[in-house]
Image (cartoon, rainbow, N blue to C red):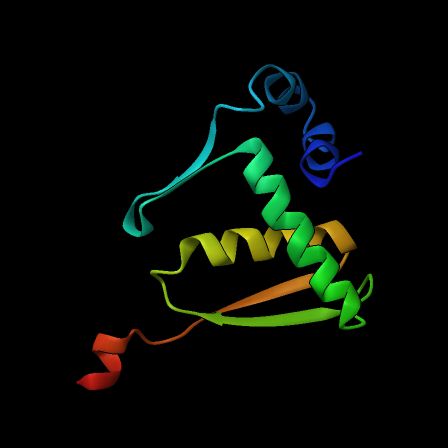
Length: 102
């Protein structure tokens, strides 16, 4: 069973919505001009989960992610990917390039 479906099953009613709308928009990050359907979210989530697993992250491990507030898609997929392997993500907002230049 794929990661998005497993997460959807945990939230009950989302499973039926997922089954009906796999190819419809699931999430939109307007500041990054990104629109993903459920299948793309699952692909990105699985890719990150496999990468974390190959780096020996396991269930219960903590993962610190420092991102700019503008990197919404990265933080979203990181939360899903770490949840897929049972790890914990701690998000820390980094400074933007504009803030660094000031």
